[in-house]
Image (tube, rainbow, N blue to C red):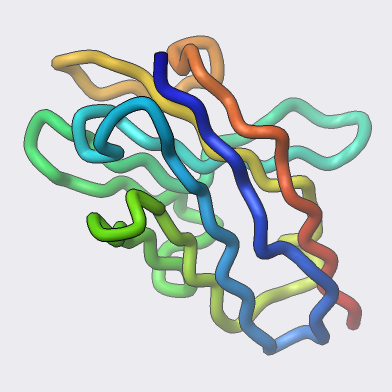
Length: 124
């Protein structure tokens, strides 16, 4: 069973950068689709980025496209979310999640394994 542990959040000023990490254990990260989601209190969890293992494509939501890049380190079996030009609206708890599938999935309910989340706070 794949397990994930997120880390690397923090507090940064608007315009700054952070690079949350998702350490994957139990399998190679690229054997799974790896999604990044975020959630603010009182709102539903929303997708940020998805890496699809079937064809190595990566999806980015329109709210972060151009500012956020997902990447993976095979030696560390860790996935990263490089976030640049951060805005106060990016403040949320960021979660990484994994699923095994042959088709694209962007919804929270389609992901079966979840990390514990890491807080990202962007001050204005």
